[in-house]
Image (tube, one colour):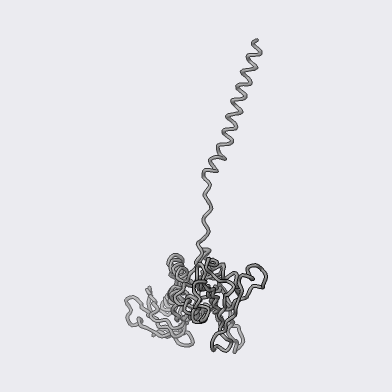
Length: 356
């Protein structure tokens, strides 16, 4: 009887211990699950140029506020001040050879390629070596910079030439240019001219380097690697992309910006971007309005969208500046003057960036 009682107790104790062990094992996993951070939502797609420009402005403020010291170049005007020695303090224009001349210093001082701080150190050393000032305190300020122009052209709001008086990035330059225009493509092209080194043969031409930056990656990924630094002499080009218009009896009429010259839209894809057909649409009488090759006038291409959607006819490839017009059954007059009607409907449309 005693043995049976001890056996029951042993089994109870063992069972309780097993239960406690299971609870302790499960607790960390439960706590871990509670602490899991939900995945960050994917960045919002920037559909219009206005949204993209607001993003450019925000990122330029957030990522581009790193003021750096710019290099001095030929033609720049520098102010040199030597504390308590007014005879040596003056403004000097850097010569074409990149040198400046200071009174009482027997050699010319090469300023081109140096930052303000580096030139301060160099002048300080020369003043001490030549026994002119025992403990010089030198300050160099770039008063006027002509050697560091960054040119921004193409599909931007304000094409400009920006003098890089400090280190700047691509986002800052695009922000200075007012952002991209409605017909901007998806790439920024940076053309950089690299001067030959001192060991290059006489007459050597500058090396041309081209850097391609995807604007979608720059604005949506948040990765600073796309916000590359730009330097004096760089040319930033934002190529223009084509626009395809979809108007008439569709849910969301608009102009759809092709991301680049290689991108192509078909009639069905353009129709999908426009939200599809309205219930009153007459897809059998759809028309593509296309500019003539010579630039004079337009031609009308009739498209039976019903047969295209039913895969009875091949889809039609659209070109830049095409207008796909889907007539409405309630607008009989539109069929008589389709060109004028389609053109008038494109006025004031919001342009949507049709890429990824």
